[in-house]
Image (cartoon, rainbow, N blue to C red; front, top):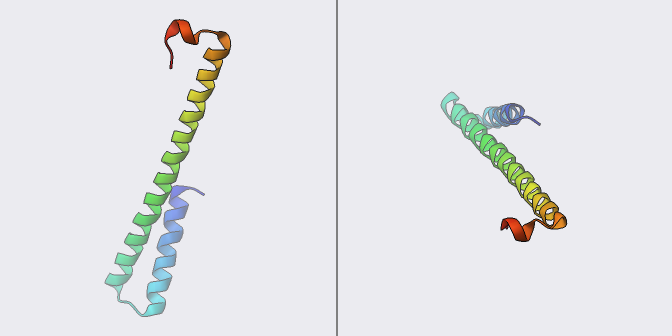
Amino acid sequence: MSVAGLVGCASALAAAVAAAAGAGPRLEAVLCLGSAALALAVALALRERKRRLRFREAERLSRSLFAAAGLRRRSGFR
């Protein structure tokens, strides 16, 4: 799911809950913004985690290729 979709779903859910609870428009807006901010933070954290995992995997592959080629000792690659 995209970040925009996640934020939109969170905002719609917050608006529905606030309306069902009989909250005023200000509280409804605060709940929408809060839930959208939380959804955005979670989506960005997950994206960053995925990026780091890809980087670590690429680093492991690079190390194993250098070791297999016997270049690790000569180049000082760690």
